Image 1 (cartoon, helix red, strand yellow):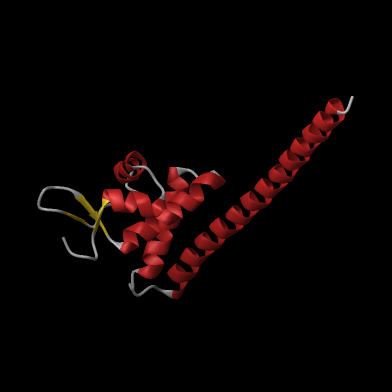
Image 2 (cartoon, one colour; image 1 turned 135 degrees about the vertical axis):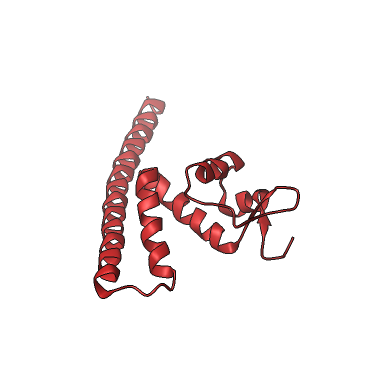
Length: 134
């Protein structure tokens, strides 16, 4: 096995994803191991790890597998080195911008939810403090 290839256990540790989750992403076509060992073990490259990290970052923002697939398809084409027409390139960039805007909106929503949750926890702490002094 070359030093540029990693087995699934190493990838799981680097991405903080379970083996099961990585296999699920393979089954759904989001990430395909770059190679197989002679024994049939999945082998991944740093590019595969980077792809899994994109997926891992999208998941808590509520993106669906289809949305993940669409973003990865757009970024794959942009990164492929393939010669793209100006219109194709602009269309791909527009898709990626749409995902960036959706991600930012979801982050903003999560910040609002977090602020409300912190406010609630603070209210409970105050209530417990008041009840303890009675």
